[in-house]
Length: 250
Image (cartoon, rainbow, N blue to C red; front, top):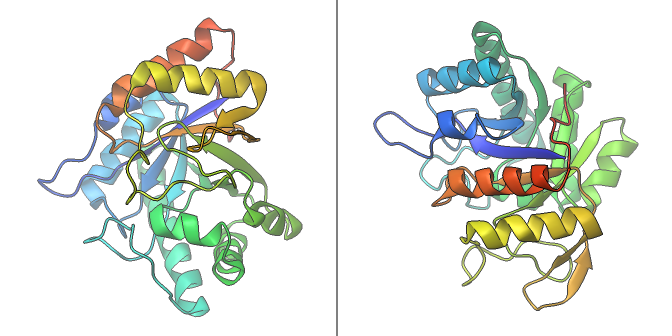
């Protein structure tokens, strides 16, 4: 099982999360590319730290939305979205090369991530961008989303992920952050929840119903309060149960 986190999101004097601590815990790092968060110097340092820890690196591409942290819905044209995603991946590839790291996968962020899970046109645009810049890049996507089959049909390797710190609806989508209970905060409860999911393939939706969720990676949001401790508890709980932890992408 892989554990991933969104990193490289600090911007100038504004600090987001604790990348150094998270990189000692996770196996994959979704690194911001400057569109929703992250400045070049901070991103480069995160990439250097990822390389030092042997953590796999992914491009955390997003809508151009620094003010909204990439969590506001947008409707760019296909030509704009394809170019934006290529631009972000290319920028991160350059910084990664300088840091002694390599970008091996792509995980869209925030509103873009949730939109392409079900929006066929924007989803195809993101897939087209990956195929155009490097078809060897893997795509990290929401478990159970139609995007997975569409991307695989076009030749991409796709890995599904489950969210440790987010509540689920019965249809496998994430509960809106605008609703109470959408983000989970108890490290021990979340760690136990993830272990039960790994062992059974089922997770409890916000309604209390058990739903099946197939995935090979667990996401812990780096910007959540207590994210480091949550990731640490999850890793410890899985390891104690004999679950092997490793990056899905080399």
